[in-house]
Length: 320
Ligand code: SF4
Ligand code: SF4
Ligand code: FES
Image (cartoon, rainbow, N blue to C red; front, side):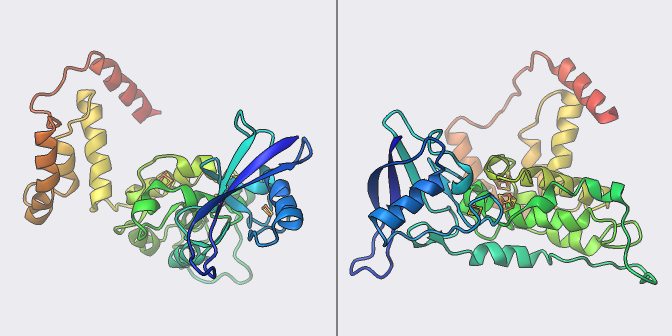
């Protein structure tokens, strides 16, 4: 099978370091993965190509990169399914983390965020006589999240991290959930208020925009966004409702549940705690003015045809 691999290259040691695209036409087996093709390129065509790989079985997590614009494991992606009509596969380093050389990125940011969530059990109750025991049933729901292989694909494609490097990000938040949902962590009821409080700070769980990119990128079905939503539920249940994110969620729910539509004027005001929060209200001025000049301020609410159906659906969901 003929294929052309187009690779985004960068050599920091070159006389004039710059990012450039290079194309490699080659022949590979019908069942070859993108990683197989890259290894052929490195071993037979261009020994200067840098990439990370080890297990070649979607286990070690080292070969995450962007293939045709989306992050994934090169060893889990078939070349035949990645080619466009001209037989071209576009390969880039993972995003967000910074290109060190060719397809190798700097994982410092990734590990700093994992460390930030203190990724280890922190039991708070009295020490047991022997080991801490968790029942099988209480751990089953964690099997998905413990499948994380730390490949960084979710971080690479996170739309918030791309613009805000302070965001904890999908991998770290999914890792945090692995502990907040573990019955051995926190107090006797398995709740760690300190953890939930820290995760609810700015740049934490409430900063996720639910774009779902991390769910699509994750090669192990960890579904980080779903874990972040579960973290939010845990925080609300534990009474952490005094944050912009929690107020935003409450305002959204109340508005849709009561009126069958979203009140876009009230939402930002209630999210910051009301009009009395003068600094926050003033911070909205520039965006408010831009929205006004672009005809985006809803002075009158549009009539929603099926508002009653929305309300009914909402109530049914609420009771289920
Ligand atoms: S769903 Fe949230 S965490 Fe996942 S990629 Fe989007 S913004 Fe990032
Ligand atoms: S959550 Fe998925 S994509 Fe993110 S680091 Fe873990 S395995 Fe990789
Ligand atoms: S080489 Fe190990 S996950 Fe791809």
